[in-house]
Length: 105
Length: 105
DNA sequence: AAAAACTACCTTGTAACGCAAGGTACCTTG
DNA sequence: CAAGGTACCTTGCGTTACAAGGTAGTTTTT
Image 1: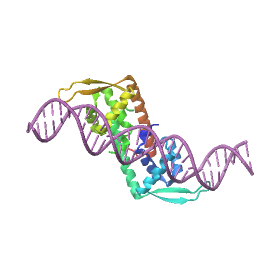
Image 2: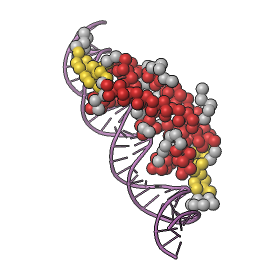
Image 3: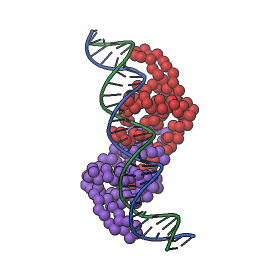
Image 4: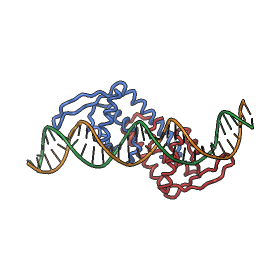
């Protein structure tokens, strides 16, 4: 799976997952694993970026097994940003497909 | 238009354009312009990469106006690579859309 | 009980790629 | 002759993903 293709989409994917339910980094990686893979070295910097941009807030929660988890929750800005990213994504896909020709199935 | 989203797709787009007809860099940029934009600072290194990977060959041709043009032609490897990139792209788009949810239109 | 494996957090350095800004040279048009 | 278009190119920068590594607690295996 191409590393390059993922650029820019991982942030959107993470936001989309958090849009359904709060989550913690380690779990998000495994949720993405089927389909769009992502390594741990990628997600932690990404989550900090989202937090710096105020797209998510965090809270700690104990776990029954293993260390405590740092949960992330989408903010209102995060939801808006997700909507923007999605429509930008769909537009982009269409533009690329136009260039690739009409033979895409 | 997001810089990051383009990563990896521009190479594919250029190959797709050359699949229809030979072309020169300056012209490819303008052909892409409607839709997926690309700057000159991007295409020249990219074309050299394609050449190094033997996906294209080049030849010079005079132009009626302006300096001579360096045309690029797809090789057989280039055509195969394009096919691979395309199917990888479609697969990737599907995977991302799955994560985004079923509400894509 | 010791060793291995899993959960869950994190950091550092590297590589790829696209872009802005610049530069060269030729040719046409005002 | 100056301005702008064609067409080539380079350098340095910023962003992002990844591999590799590190910490610490818990569970499972031997």
